[in-house]
Length: 594
Image (cartoon, rainbow, N blue to C red; front, side):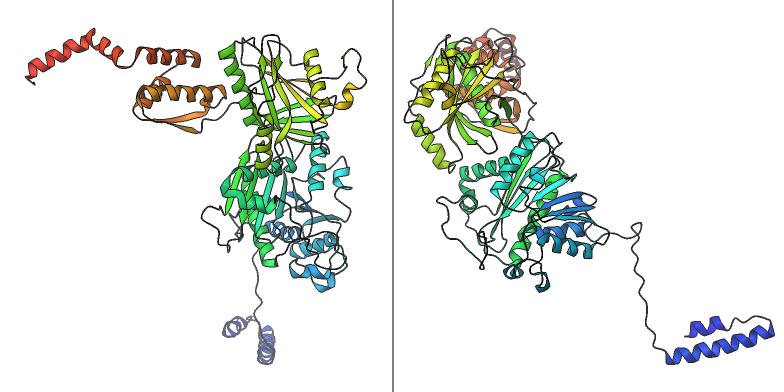
């Protein structure tokens, strides 16, 4: 008021204007005494001077991105809100469901939304949060929508699937493999039956497979590691759960039990982890992330979370059957190990082979080779061929199937063609016919993996062939005409990230460690060793390897020679016939030390 009076008293020197100014001053002051006055807050929102409150948080990775969100339910609806607040440029929402009364317990809808399409309601919600965001929504089935279209990516930078639908994941695997459209990262998020656990799987754009592939790898990891058994029991129970929870009349699918707080915690945690992985820019990898609710009291041998990252493996196509064969890096490493062992013990021209274990999915037309074994004890090896035995195969198959809850079991055989192309020979053809015609063979299809070797190099070629019983019905003279494909095995450089510890024990330790080093070398793991820690006898072979610049075969010969001659004798011999002894004697004599 005082400031306003001072400003009004600055009248003009003109008398006429001065009188007008005094009248104006009186009018304004009288009005101010009667009129209510409130402050008008002016908000500053210029990006040049304002710092966002979520600066530095993981979800800022999504700022400016185009995101396709499949599913607008318990997980999808809060994630849509998180993405809108994070600053995404465009949201593509897909969900065929409608808002039902029972959903209000845990999904961010209100009473007026009942009966309306979920995707449409979520679209309105995010527009209220961010009027500038571009939102498209569709209420058709995902299986009949983007997964039945050539443009399945819908020009998005990433696809987030929250449907937890196995059918969607399997069809997506086929579409992603056969489509000519450049792929984008695809994440799939799901929660346990009581909203106590969450699982995130991510297939980056250059990874070999899709979410179903990563989901399977996550299952095998959870089954193989005892401290993750509670996650395996949650997402892949064995036996399967028989209780079906129907929350309301007309609900067509079973669902989970959990509150809005439970779902929001898991949704936020998984979205944060997804953003962290995407920010690491590992375009050719796959990732999985298990987590539990923070309020749960876990046992001491149970992890509250687990994170995995995988690279790709060997990919081979069988154009005759239409199957794609994906060989895990660990399985391929085992095959190479058996081949090198065979070359060392039986000669480079002798064939060898073994059994393949994995899984075949006829919907997506993919065969996963996850684990392998070498030749069974009753196998026959020669330069003319390889006849795979059967001793112990049934027991091995039962162990793998039980351990992985059905995800790893017998799928076929592998063998080598030394210095030759990996194409089936008449003997191979007869062998597969015999296998599939056996009455106790439960599988209608069998995989034959042939590895072509080259004595002059470490290059391997791969041929994969899926045979079914009908392949042998209309053959003449045991000849089958089929289209074949041969791939050169990829040999990507492996990072040095392994530490190796060699224990003591004299010459026995040296002999033992030589065998270990040989096995690691055969499987391509030794070249990944960055640090070696040794003690006593392990220090001898560790030093020999660390300072060796010759091929492993030459290094191995040196160690064997050392073991045959003994360690003490060469040291004494060198000491007696070297200047070191003379210098030592003179030093002792001069110093007078006794």
